Length: 188
Image (cartoon, rainbow, N blue to C red; front, side, top):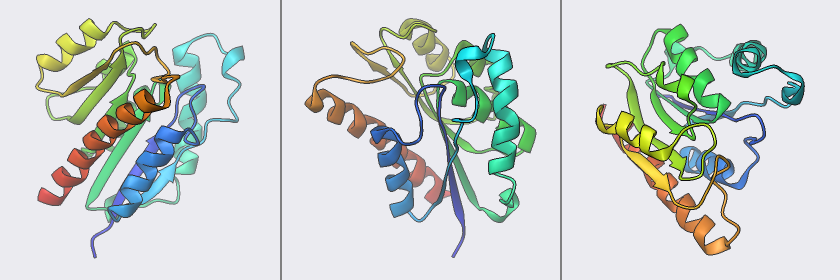
């Protein structure tokens, strides 16, 4: 059986323990992937000056937590990332020098610098009230590259709804993007 890997990259205040990330992990586990949930909780984000300092503090953690993984042993690799994790995932793909399938949840403007013509981006998700980038800017970026862009009305950077029905509907849309990832991987 060929090995498949899914790595979940959290954000600064959005861990892999959040319900959406847990459901994404379950989706990939059911599809036969080994799932690695990265943990950034050791980083004191509130004390850091900005994105580059945060990314610099997170990078060694990512490398440490993925250190025991032979990335070349996997036929299929997927990164699902949130906020700061999107920058880390994009940079790690470049550092690894091998294409992975990416799903970016609330990417930061710096994330867009990581996307190349050869990038395999299954989709990007952003709320209409995101404080780091407008939904229109991300939609224009995605449209010019043929990347699916899910715009979530009425949510900010957390992608959270107070109403359970709306939250569940959003989860289903994001899980559908994950389904597209596993289907794309199976075709390769």
